[in-house]
Structures are given as C-alpha cells and as structure tokens.
Length: 486
Image (cartoon, one colour):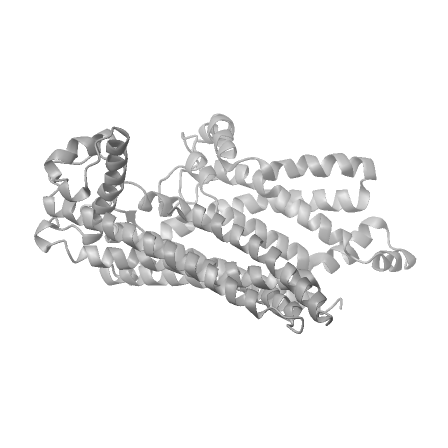
C-alpha cells in the first residue's frame, strides 16, 4: 500500500478515535455521576494520539530501515564476477534498483493489456524490450545475475511494504482500542495530552540540532574517505586545482578559497556601506510615506532569483566592465570576472544588510537619542556617536548574514565569474569559488568513490569550518560591545 494512503488511514482512525473517545468520556460521566477530571476533548485527544502517533513513528522508522535491509540482502546475491573491473558494487545496485522499478511498470502494463504474467516467469531476454518501452534503457553488458537480483529486490520490497502496512495499521487499531478502554472519569487526560504537546515541542527543537549533527557527520565521514585516497597536505597547501577523472588529479583548495574570499569581499564592499546608509536614512531621516515606499522597493531585491542576477551579470554588467574598464586599461578581455560577480552579488545582498540594520537601529531606545540631543549633539553626531555604537552588535550580525549569503552563492559566480581556479589579484580575471566546484564535482557520470568526487565533501567541510569561525568571531564582537550598553 502506498505510504500516502497509510498516512490518510491513520488520520481517519485518529479522527474516529477522537470522536468515540470524547463520547465515551461523556457517557461514563453521565452514567456514574462523577465529574470528569479534564474537558471531554482531552479524552478524545488521548485516544487519537495513541492511535496515530506510535503507528506513525513505526512507519517512519520502517521507511528508513527497510531499504538498507533489502539492499544488503540483494547485494549478497550479486557475485563479484559481474562487477566491472575498477567499478563499485554500489553502481551495480543502482542498476538493480532501476530495473526493479522498471519491472513494476512492465507488470502494470501487462496487467492493463489483460496478459498477467507472474514475475517468476520473466527472464532477461523477453523483458529487455519491454523495459525499454517504459523508459529503462539497458546496455548490452547487463548480466542476467543483475536481472535476477532486481527481481529479488522487487519481491523483497513488496513483502516489506506489505508487512509495514499490516504492522502499522494493526498497531494503530490495537493501541487505539486500549486507549479507548482506559477512558474513565478519573483519567488525567489533560496531563497526557499536554505531555504529548511538550514532547512534540521538544522534538521540534531537536530537529535543528539533529540536522546539524547529521550534516556534519556526513561531511566528516566522506571527508575521511577522501583523505584516505588523497594526501591532506596536497589538498590544503597546493596552489593547483586540476581534477582529472582518469587519475593524476591536482586538488589544491587554495585557488578556490582565494576566489571565494575575493568575490565575497568585493560584494561586502558594495553591500555594507550602501546597506548601512540606506538603513540610517530609513530609520532616522525618512518620513513615513518615503519609508513605506523605499523599504519595500529595496526588499524586492531579496526576492529576485539568483539565476536572474547571474544572467544580469553575464549579459549586462560583465560586458560593460570589459568594454569600459578592462580593455581600455589593458587588464583583461573577458566579460567573466571577479569584479562582475562581486558587484552583482553586492547588489543582491544589500537588502540583507539594510533591512536588518534598519530594524536594529529602530530598536535602539529613544532615550539614548534624547539624552544626546539634551547634551547639545546634532542629529548626525547622535547617529554617529550614539545610535550606531548601540546598534553595533546587531549590525555585525546583519553583516555576518550577508557574508554567509555571499560565501554560499553559486549561480552568480558561475555566470559572472566563470569556472577558472586560479590565484590572481586582477579583479578582471575569471575565477571560481568553493561552492561552484562542489556542484561541478558532484554532477555528471562519475564514480562516487573516486577522490575527484569525494573532494566535494572535503570542500564542504572546509567551508563549514570557515563559516563557523566567522560566527564565533561575530559572537565575540557582539558580546564585547553589548556589555557597554546593558
């Protein structure tokens, strides 16, 4: 049974449990003349929770565990002789999954034609053409053992799905009935319901922590695999980036880090002064009408897709810089450059600086301004010597957010700065960033276990550590200056 249908059935059972649980509580209270401990709705919620929540947890756990068990069993059926030389068993398993999915489509198609054929009667020769008809293209070198493994994969998956359906629905019914029979006027249903809500909120708060742990764990594991295949000193200290998927690659990160910081610094040079001046104008000088028009217009920049910014850099900004600056000064002939990407990215992150800084400046207590005016300071002096220092911790956070956004940008760099990994001070030269190379190394028909692919995880972990360091530095600055104004 489809997972969506199972979830729908659980929802219906939970709703039914809520209704019958509430009615039972009211009936027992009327029969015994005892006042209910909780409101009637809490008794219905108790039955609904016991009906749906445990079954849903088992469903989610089953969906996570079953694929691994099925793949481990089917993988043992594939002999080493059918694995291509220099290939990986995971690549063969991907063919197995693809063929298994095609078999479902083939059998469904045969059933629609009135020619039901049991899967045991299918063999590789008579089903190859029909697999191609349903969109599963197979090469001539697919062994028959892989086809038999695909049949076993399909059968094991179907058996597992059937068992999952039975177990989940049976658990929902049994636990729902037990919760229904436990209902009595003295039952502390409200406590049960509120404990569940508390657990739900705790689980929601743990999602971010567990997600971070999962991301970091996956990066560390794959990075460890990479450094087992490629020397760490060459990765961190080499100045050459030249991946060759047939061996002999140079995977030095220094050119990528330089391009990342170069583009980010240019974008911050553009965005931070403009964003701060916009924020000061909107919060201290602009009237309500001007503010109501200008601030939404600036925030529209944050909603423009990055691919649009990339096209703007490629079609407009790049050629303009090349024709009016680079070529006349003899600094370059390409429209793709660090300066192009940096300028366009700076425009993109202006709202991150201006909007956040505007809200932060508005949050500065008016008493600080009034005290400054009372001492004879002008409005500009008050802004410069009182408002901005008081808002500095929040402004640092806004700048950090903008810097993180710039460091993680990909499309603008691809279209505006190119994909050349090099160390150069000329802002009119094409360069690239870490994020661009992460995408390029993980796309295409490449072996996942090769250093040229695993290097993407080492790049990601390095970028994560750098961003974490920036956050720690910003937190230190925020705490240092905040102590002066509390």
